[in-house]
Image (tube, rainbow, N blue to C red; front, side, top):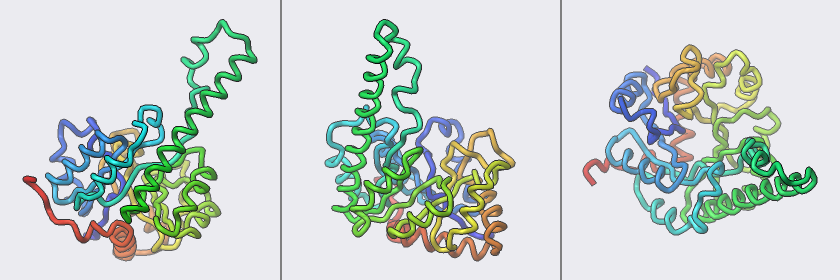
Length: 292
């Protein structure tokens, strides 16, 4: 059976609380030999580390997700520096920028201000959006700084913010590599990521009926420049679409990607696992730490 990795999973989420051991067993039975649990806050990152200590196949990435930027402490760097010393912490992530749901687009942002004039409301909402984007940029910058200091690579999240994300990342490109996860952009944008020495990663979207744009990008991406992931519990591939996703479903993702790339599963396994080990060196170096 070809071996694959799930390079982006949210295994600390409560979605798995009832059957976690079974989830891991199903992944390993499907040939998914390594899984990276991704932190979205300091607490989430600590939970990912504890899972990595308990399960040999699990590794952790630590970071603060941009969508929760307003809840972030003023300085993330000391906590992240300490976490990065752990032998099973393989990256900083997921970090980046997300403009998909700005404060001005949330009904509670404007419904509570019905008494103000239209012009004043518009100005206040613009200011809310500007503060939100600035906070995201601030915590992204902090985390990139820690990555450069510690020699860690980064798992990059961007949604409706590709140009700003790439622009903020570029000054670090000589010291830090990023994997732009859940990549759903076109081939031109993929090449812009590769041009700065970074990578992309593909999810179950590649199996969706409406995922032809992602399949086109997969077809254009060199075999040694991408990784596979589930982003579980989200984005379960066909035939599980609409259900809870889990690491075992990398198998279905890999089958579609192999078809798109016109390669064997064995070739895809060798390429994507090699790329992951080179991007996350601790995947090869870390030892099992159960009991610590």
